[in-house]
Amino acid sequence: MQRVADEIIQIPRSHSIFDYLRFNYPPRMHSFFRVKRMTDATNRIVSFSPDWIWLDGWHGYLLAKRLKEKYHLPFAYRSHNVEHQYFAFIARSSSGIKKHILFYNAQRLKHAEYETYTLEEVSQALLGETKLITGKNRHEEIERLYNSKDVKDQQRLVDYNIMDCKLAYDILIKTDIDNLIIERSQLTGLPLDRLTASIAAFDSVYIKNARNIGLVSPTTRYTEKENRIKGGYVFSSKAGIYHNVLILDFKSLYPSIIKTFNIDPASYVEKKEKNTVESPNHAYFKNTEGILPQIIEKLHQAREKAKKEKRELASYAIKIIMNSFFGVLASPNCRYFNLKMANAITHFGQMIIKLTAQEIEKLGYKVIYSDTDSVFVETSKSEAESEKLGLYIQNYINKFYQDFVLKNYQRKSYLDLQFAKQYISLMIPNIRNKDDEDIAAKKRYAGLIKKDGKEKIEVTGLEAIRGDWTDAAQEFQLELLKKVFHKEPVIEFVKKYVKEIKEGKLDKKLIYTKSIRKSLDEYTKTTPPHVKAARKLDSLDSNIIQYYITLDGPEPIQKLSHKIDYEHYIDKQIKPIANQILGLLGKSFDDIIKNSKQATLF
Image (cartoon, rainbow, N blue to C red):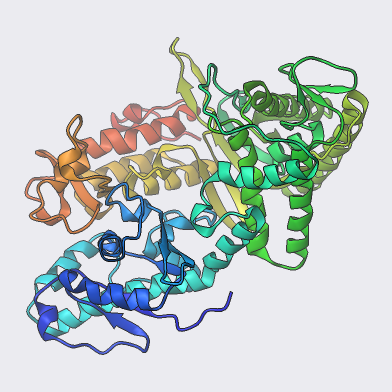
């Protein structure tokens, strides 16, 4: 895609200082300072006849509103939470040519792995640059600049805003998101504004192939699900701390199952016939190559070609499409929806994970955990020996399925198990069941991994990686895990951390950060803490609310007037995390805080 005459336009919040000051900007950057003068910005944008608009900021919806009012561009707007929204516009020029204007934000980079998807985090990771004002207390500084009469402060505020615009633009160029969208459009045949419609993408690809062999597709219909789709199999033998654990994943398991067992709407038959493939849930498919397996094979070949040519975006676009197929077939909105057919995929998946674990244990190794498409294998070998074992198991299982599928289904296996990584140490925590017994948690674990010679702790499904936990909780969890994995004493660490919270030394790490997802007036049935805090503000200048829990309830950081409720943070943020980990060592948080007689856990 050729980019011509790219420009950056900032439309900051209205303020009287902008009426009297003129600032200099880099070439091809423009500012429109009054919301009521947004017509100027709108006219300039429309004059470009743009294909893309990269939008960053709280007031982006105002531009969308202006485009609709002035140029009658239809769009679906669901809330003021622009940070999480996708806008698709379709406008007609005077010549009748459709233009597609897509609004994107750093939040759309979900295929990348970042701890958070803020502009600050993503720009730092991708560009090595960041916002001009950063940190948990940046909103206080922004408000100070906003209210300042000093020209230097006013200039700094404008510079801050224009840098946000520049960072958002540079991320677009760096990630090449526009070309990713075009790749997906070319693969599915869908217009740019409909790419998020996975069912439409499936229809576009499938119906064309069905027509080529003379098949008529059913009309679109909506069917109520009488029963739920069967989920993936998850197994955990016992909560605990394990060492030298191998992680083996099936590559694109569900597309591989579709291809291996010929799961396809055109191949599905109601009753068992001669030469049919029978799934574990007794769904039947003709053993002559169906349409969907052929589509997946073509996409797979296209992806491998893209990989060889180092076209990463094309490879990723194909992966998105292939992985969406199961979800489409499992949706009642899909014209091909069939509960038995959809469940055939997940039942085969469960069978494969269970059978894989059995075959690995026949080799003399213990499977301690398995998920939808992966198995965790405990070994007693060294780090170097474990890596060799991982590759051996990978090859052994793939050969096993080649023989197994041919013998039992008279088909070729496309199942591909890959040795992914090795955890030096792995923790699977306890949870309590209805009988008050300790059992191993599912899809919740933390592991110590070494990458490029550096150690890193990976956390999956545990509390402190979720957005409603504070920096203190995240820091405490990682430090406690680090000590446990390295067999270091933990009692004094826990005591010291709690003491520092009570002494006010960690106040900046106790801030909650949550998004307002609708108008404050719309919160009627329940009033979450961040909404209570937001209602105490003089004005709502952002959808991101930062607040403390005080002795008088939630209070925004801008208007903190009561003492912080440290017992709340200890009880709700620190204690649950501590107990999950300490329970595996035979201790509890209360034991430590109450000065247990035991001086060390090791």
